[in-house]
Length: 261
Image (cartoon, rainbow, N blue to C red; front, side, top):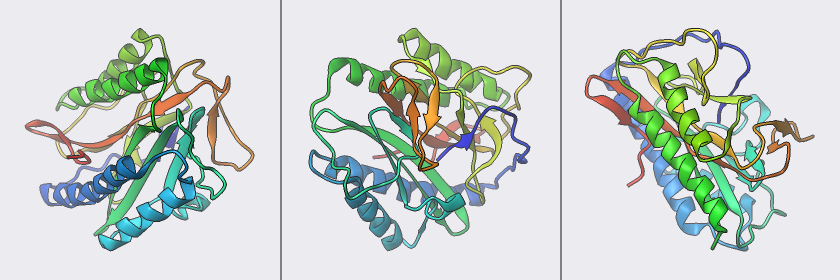
């Protein structure tokens, strides 16, 4: 789940100790296990409500608490966004997945006082090649952004890597929602835009943990929020992809806490 963009966040940037990063890695591995399970069970005919229920059950079995449930009033544990839905889709018993859909699942947990957060976009059965290409480029954009998580680099180095690769593929980058710092709070400073914004961005220092999450659209970058107050869709109703990892800044380079085996 991402922070809203559009202005610089005033939230402080908090550096973690190695012990705290280890707890965050454990939290993110619970998230990774849940997302791996969702990758296995997502198929035509399943409802987004069923996926939400399975995610919450596995999370609680691992002695963690769903991070999104009740967050600013969000009603469920899992954000499920289908096709033109960018982020923050609400699970529904009525919404059954169809062959050819794409489903973005965003999940977070709180474990021993620290948060984990990750997202993946899942093809439902066989999908069209242009949609497959969008997923590939979005995933690659995340990987290129992660490579920039090096002490001394700036947040804008991550933003540029994501933006350049996404736009080179002929796609547009969502600007209204951005990545974020993460730790003992779900959203900490700094904001991590997927595009280069004006002004100097913060430098990366050892012990920072950030959630990098490209949201890349087939058509326009413009989005709108539906009347439920949560679900974000593309303004032109073309499909959107979303991938996210929580990444720690270490002396040995980027440490992806939410990596899925």
